Amino acid sequence: MKILGKNSIALWILGGCLFFHTAFALEVFPLPKGNDTVVGYLKEVYLEPGDTLANIAYRHNMGYEELARANPHIVPGHIYSWTPVYIPSAYILPPGSRKDIVINISEMRLYYYPKGKDIVVTAPVSIGRQGWETPISKTTIVDKKKNPDWHPPESIKQYTAKHGFILPDVVPSGPDNPLGEYAFRLGLNAYLIHGTDDPYSIGKPISSGCIRMYPNDIEQLFNEIPVGTEVQIINEPYKAGWLNKTLYFEAHPPIANKPSDKTVNRNFKHTIMDQKPPATLNWKKIITIAHEENGYPTRID
Image (tube, rainbow, N blue to C red; front, side):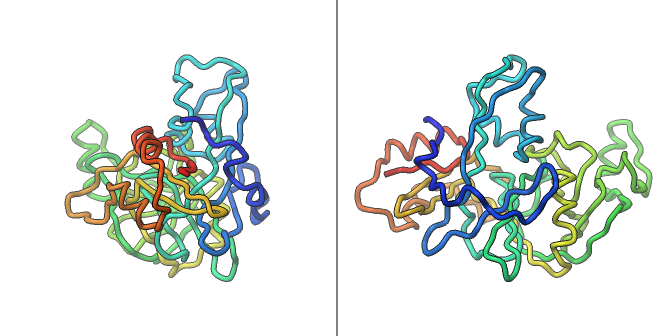
């Protein structure tokens, strides 16, 4: 399946809004009108000498795994200069209301809808690894802190002790603090949205359940997002949506979460049919997209 060309995503969504002005800026797009739910655009860059997928992901504010899935022709350890790299910065907005913060763990991406502004802000995140899954939930931000100390939960202290490393009760703020320089506390026991001292970990299921963000991303959001903001954590590997009367489909590898979580949408056919598609669809193409799980919107007419 070839990546979308610029004829497949309308150019009117290219610009976004200059909502933030620092390097490695968050992606910001105007909310689509009417029934449309596709935002962003796809672009092509070229590997430079010494590049890796990890530093390209960081440079273009992408998650590592979403960049790797969009570029199956690039094999880590066999990277050659001037190879084309597709930056899949086009997205079908997640299902549900366009309100506050939505985090879709299957695509490892956060969406923020600022109140009173017809824009969506999006950024890659890391989520919990197997056995330490990020919970599917609806909660709020109950506190936020700059230069936070880390108070490791007892479960993490016990885990590290079994592997020969004793964590202190408090890890003070500083360059070695795994929370980075900014943290939002959620109304869930011990779960945070926070920065990191390891930017190359972003876009992977690697945390102990918290949501990690690039340091620049969370810094830009810190003063924008107030305490009390609602946070929905969902698990939707398949998304479908419209752009200019054309139906698009996007597939990500499903994240297996805890058995008690009943919100996982694994049936891509239901996702398509929820959009009230035309009677005739290219189901062969849809099934291919679902199996490839390349993570970017592809037209299915």
